[in-house]
Image 1 (cartoon, rainbow, N blue to C red):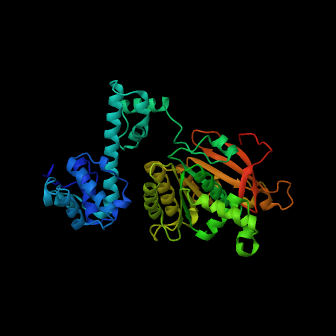
Image 2: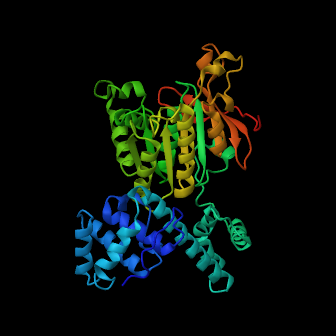
Image 3: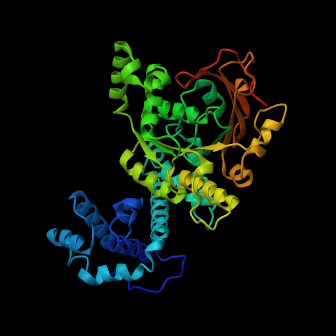
Length: 439
């Protein structure tokens, strides 16, 4: 039977039952939305809605296309079709979905309601003495999400956040694998947006590849979106990083590699095939396309920690051709931060700097050198700049040295880190000469 009659809703969808119906109706109308929306059966608070979503999951697992016909067949085979109220319930769901374009909005409301429900339950059990502090710790990820609700956080919610602070585990922090940089950053949080800026050919793609390589080595899922580098070039760069074989040799591997290098390459590729890396040839993808792909990747990675790498900001196409460059950059920056916060997946966004710095005597980048710097500086939790003196001065003593300038770090210190940059392999390593923290 229906749990409540379908009622007209405004854009807020404050009625949880109707929001659940709306998202189920959207999936019934367009089956592929099931893979795009980050939901689970447990996110639904009403029994009939849980049964419906569970049947959708079963239908997908059977490998058939999800639509009204296959859904009804799955329900009928489990003797659940009549139990949920038959077509009356299904019709009430499709009627609640006023527009398929709002499906992501419906899902977000359902997810927020689910997080709040689970957070209150976990907190009540702990405060009533029913569970231990260790049990509460396992639910802290859920409790932390209560701060994302638009209606604010009351004193009760703040007390939960204090408990989270006292008992915070560092398991969700992610480290770059470059020790001097990790010492300054002190770990990347799941909700961080990190912008890495550099002039062309300084090494921002190599920097991103080093991070992706190191993170996957820690079994962290990596979603790599490259607008300029194809799969074959990504493969070569990873092999160079993992084996020490120079990139120039890998370009004509069949002619230039000796038996030892070939064996090292084969061994490394065997290791790489087991790592959680998904490379996306991103040409033509808008930032909203990227968000959808990240959601799919997150499902594939399961419980693994997950990082998004995007190379690079200034060649992501505008979602609307009528947008000015500033409008487009503002939207991209905002959505990147949304990805990090909503999916708890840090985003590392590479960016190209303008030419203004080349007119200065000191070529080290500043925040004002970021094109569209206003919104980027506001949204970013951390801003790193890459600088190589030998890029500007071929005779400098600082050959093969990449300076990473921590220009902004929310809740953290600023600093400079010097790394050795092996141009032959693209590998970044700690440099022995110590550089004091602080700009």
